[in-house]
Length: 278
Length: 289
Image (cartoon, each protein chain N blue to C red):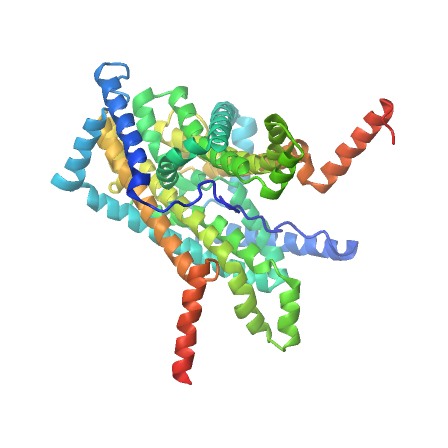
């Protein structure tokens, strides 16, 4: 499936119109607020936001501590959620009985908004990082589980027959056929899971916490310090981008056969290695 | 946005005997789990203050729905907000998605903003919106709208953009007008994708209303869960959460049903149903072959 935005090589001529548009938008916004077209209490001036960014990120640097707290919570929750999800999905794909008896609970977990568990999880795991990690794990579980399971159970019967006819064992069929075939879907699930893990961490911080970007944001918002609030929001965007692109990078490395040039690079490297070994 | 659907439901294969046996095993496992939980809390292996016994949860269900009946008011408020925010958000998403999708120039310029928007957890904007719009239904609807907007937007966009090139060529070579291409080629392929986006949006709306109510803490099911948990009335909190499970399930099934009716051509049974209806209608009009 083609993404709605076909990739363009980054170049200055391409970048220039984008920058011009961005500049115009920012300028129009600034003017609108200054002339009172937009109320500055509701929507701060871009210059105010910029000043807040400089102060929070560079001068005082207060945001970095909270940034790393939230990042740690999201990543830890994601790893726990993903580990459980993948383990259960592998189990379900290997045994029909296991799948039958696990799936109703997975469905229940899926239709329940995981966010609803926030207060309960805070009561169970306390006000610290534990509860944020737990919520992130709970809500990142399902997309990873369902994608892994779908990937592992979709079978190309022709290929499986080929594997059988050349005498592949069950383990070989699993590791050499099922797992590689499942990887693209697994990574799609992991990407969704990362995003939801970040949401989980932030929502739990809104509900009850003493540190983290979510706390910073709600504190600034309720002081009506909108510039600083938006500046903290941007750090969540930054976390989201970092997480997404690191997963994308991993995806690209592991599912190397999807892109032509990566596939060729890997096969060249392997050929060289094999030649050296004789 | 990839959304996978595995066959998680109980498989329909197997004879009556096998199916009964499977249901019995399901019931036995469920019963054992519930019983273990109940015994665990009774013997205080699990702290009953934090992990309410299943029997307590059932009593709470009875209390909040029947004897006290206090959940209805909150449910009513929350569901109203969900529907309002969902309607606003998805209409906005579909409109903007189709506008952007049909215009390549706009698409190119909007790309960086979409990437930034996609990476930001939308729900994180909640405190900002509350600060800007004040406490009350207004800011809650704005939050739900924001949370709902993205999935219909991106799905409409990719649905409109992902037109089969060969089919498009065929349409053009047969001299189809722009309107005809839109109506007979683009829409039929885009609608199932858009419906998938709507499903994600409605689920997100339910989470959105909860977050809005967690922050505002005045009324609604989210506030109720929060209050019950604060008072360590965990059984009632769980009764509320299981209520949300039921609502979530209803949403899931409802959207599936709607998908079958609106995008009937992407389901086998819907296709036969509609084509039979059309046959009957055309036969009446004397179009019979």
